Image (cartoon, rainbow, N blue to C red; front, side, top):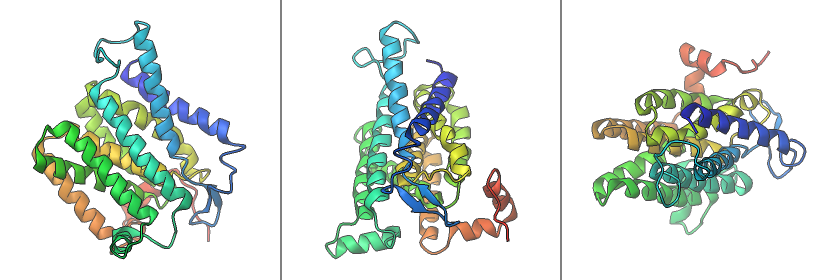
Length: 288
């Protein structure tokens, strides 16, 4: 399955899942949340990105077992190392994000509150995201750093903080997917058809499949989608970028996460004309 075919397949699967879910899952009170405009919208629909990724990978393996496709697969599993790790990252962040979407308390936000709860002996769903997401990030980092403790910790922090950034941007329709695409495109050009480029194609295609529904306020990605996009892109940076570039990205995401504890990204975007234009592109405008 080619790079473009994988990207398109990811989008097609999410569109199909949205269509099939419209009467039951999308209408479930368990997932219904009120957005910034006061509309009742299903959240956590970003979990379909994870489902789409698994569907495409199953299709790839079946096609390969039938003798269709290129030869760059491992003999034992029919799947490359990078694709296995992207699946692990997506599944891990999707699981902890879904839990927070479904039963998380709206009154606990940010690292400070969740870590404070942990220090006082209370495990919140945000705390589970910190512990579980951190473990997923370190697992993926350790798998590619071959015993280098310093880079395992640094790259693990990069992946985890990118995942959290995905959630921090998910405060307006389409915003997280726009930011994800802006981060993905230069890395995709660098990666081309290498293993991480092939691994990320269906995941990003799946996100694009949700883009229109997200922009039109028919769904919310939720943590189940936003954390997956951020974490997977963080892992792509780990695999594709040189050590100095990764250090630069790590410093940037640390600063952005710290800034989010003090300032609202939405207010900064609204007060900056180029960012406001990009943020509003394709969205329904609020009329006075």
